[in-house]
Amino acid sequence: RNRIMPGVKLHILPMSVSCLPCVALCEEGGIQYESKIVDMMTGAHKAPEYLAMNPMHCVPAMDDDGFTMWEGRAIARYLAAKFGLESFYPSDPKKRAYCDLALDFHCGVWYEKITKGILYPPCGWAPAPSADELAAIEKALHEDYWPALQKMIAFSGGKMLGGDSPNLADIFFCVHLEYTKMCCPSSCVGKHAALMDYSAAVKAKLPKWSNWSGPADEWFTSKKV
Image 1 (tube, rainbow, N blue to C red):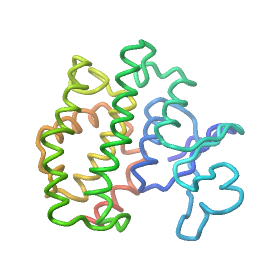
Image 2 (cartoon, rainbow, N blue to C red; image 1 turned 120 degrees about the vertical axis):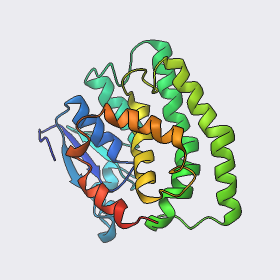
Image 3 (cartoon, rainbow, N blue to C red; image 1 turned 180 degrees about the vertical axis):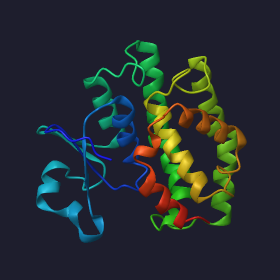
Image 4 (cartoon, helix red, strand yellow; image 1 turned 45 degrees about the horizontal axis):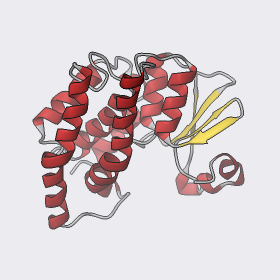
């Protein structure tokens, strides 16, 4: 659902795991916003007015009363800072540094290797990996990616990256994990019990999840493999 005001407009695809964390943050943080669907099938992302706002022609993009930017993690950081969402983006330097570390890890490693390698192929957004590539992803998940995530969670002293409540990085991980599980339950991610426990713990602390998840649930269920 949308919360409309003259200010924050999120330009999104409702089934994009790159967009949905920003929507989730607005819902959970009580930020008034308007969702504007970018119909990429008809080339709306290449329209001159969209390119003027976002020359990378990707989603999400944001227009906050004339202040425009793209890249979901940057948008989330901006919104959390502007609206003083301390629990999602703490001001303590060390806690913020680890939140930023986890966001950068999610962007540079998790999204590139796990989301693109496992979730995107059945959705038609990336080529299917070979058996050897899938084996390499699973090996890296167990030997590198999950231990790295565990270390970051351990720093918080709680069950998630934000400690006892989610921070921005938890939201990004949870969205990607929940829809990877929904679409690809037999993948190395979907079968990773500890990862799924972590994601479930985060989701349980996001009570407004159902406000925005309906279209994505329908989309990813239809792509289940």
